[in-house]
Image 1 (cartoon, rainbow, N blue to C red):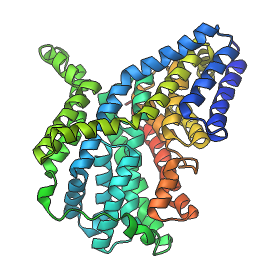
Image 2 (image 1 turned 180 degrees about the vertical axis):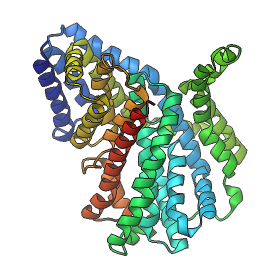
Image 3 (image 1 turned 30 degrees about the vertical axis):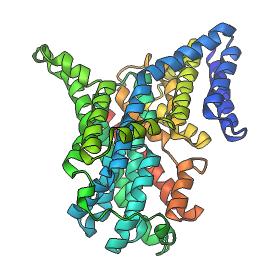
Image 4 (image 1 turned 30 degrees about the horizontal axis):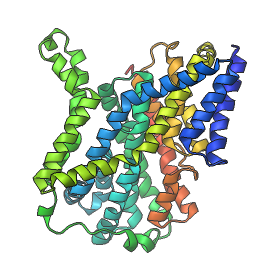
Length: 449
């Protein structure tokens, strides 16, 4: 297949996905499935191969990350129902003081965001931020924007969030190394998009921006500390899966020293095992130990899995779309062209993800579609860190914060902003996260990491 034809088919397929999602208003899973089938037929694949290719791609991706996402969701649910997020917020704010409140809220967003999706973290923490703003007499946006930025940073860069785990599977990245590099990237990016930009933009917005709806969403922190889990045990529970995955990854640097117990560390450091152990730990530390019944914990576990159905189907369809690109020969043709033109793979993945973000709105769809296109190109590239490629894809996938992203309207409605004010806050924050993240990836690549 010629490079021109391959590029044409790939572009048309992506346009079909965008058209079906945005104009026809089809579910993303169905849109990706239809585009994948049409792509296979257009590329000349036999009818039976078109279907089996999609099935194998979807099955391979879901086999690697479905349980990770489900277990991470259970852990996040326990953090929510136990009041663990409230405890972290109360402790960090009391330690930081009013002068560093924006920095404290950024730290809270980074910690809580490790265990919950952006939407859940936003629902939990922003009403809490309203209460803190009232108690400290600070502008609402001065408190709310840093935590919003931090939640978005973690969603784009750190496992076990869905888009990140999809890219990990597609690029065959090492989860432990990704966590280390993700922390190196996330902290400075969160500082730039959080406290620093907040201090720049809040004085330039109306003094009452966000104040009108604060009372509607405000949630008082429980006065009785005994009603909440301890800060230490909550933090330990949140960080447990990260520590296990880092330990499993570190074994490969220990050489013969790890022969005796290295296999055990590698086992518990697997993303599935580490998150399963962390979820079980949370049932005790944030559940049974706090007086929740076994029936209540079971109900929470079942309840949080229901909303995952659509997300997992969408991720599986992204894997099927990527398999269709590979089996049809389109990816190989594009890969050869990219290698011949010497397009830096980090820039290519970032640009594709940013384009998809503008087109479809969803960061998860942008990340999964981009990973399906870029993953085969990695086979022809040399010296590219798969972990940095995950981070660059995530940086592109959060770019712009467009109006077709549900997060745009969630932020606007919850913070009580006008559309223009939402652009100057949420959209600029997302753009800063994307650009700063790419810059950090390029610096790390230049340093040979």
